[in-house]
Length: 288
Figure 1 (tube, rainbow, N blue to C red):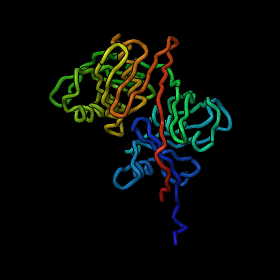
Figure 2 (cartoon, helix red, strand yellow):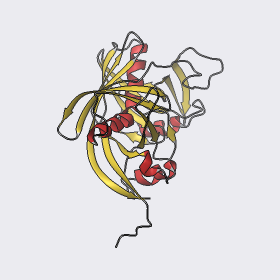
Figure 3 (tube, helix red, strand yellow):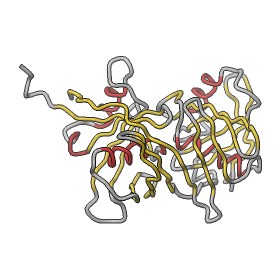
Figure 4 (tube, rainbow, N blue to C red):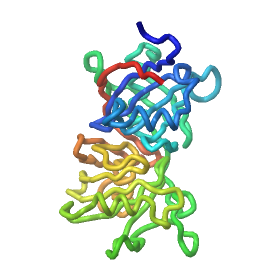
């Protein structure tokens, strides 16, 4: 017989191009410490396995329809996750909790607008999301510099015994990009060390960017609080925006990751548009 004294948490797992998130209703996890829950349930050997959890809560009043809290696998809080919030939006449609095409999600970095543009079958969802304007100043990202900067471009950094340079932007989370000709080096080790470098007071997502042409780039991702990921809405956006800002590409770019292709547009009104998908993986019950 099951032990009725053991509390359980129902969850649903989605992924955006292989970047997987476990979506949980806040009311179902009210008894749990969300940081500790994220560490346990995201573990790929002893848990369900994920790049983070997205905890949603209905808003009865205010600008947004729902609040979405993102927790990383190390228990830390993310200000924003492009794929995590897209997985949350997909869950709301999948579960029948939201039926309008337009959805406003409040995050720790502001309200983001999601528009359902296509649904295939029961579990494949395509969204177009407005996630706000990019922030370029050293204080907004943040990046530790000797004097305040209006933008961080070709900033030198020593990682181990090697010199690199990076550009940086805040897309809800800090993103630092190293532009490369190829990925034939130990970028994972470089990413791991850069994430916690003293230049980044709040740590940073580290992205290695290869320019393919004016309309497409290819990236590898070391995500803050997560590690290597197959995709990331924040990181694809940051890489695209910095490529555009540095005039390496046009203002509409396809970002190729190991998980798939995300389309990023930087509109003339400064709004960043992300077009991508979220797919249902499975449902389960977590014993908390």
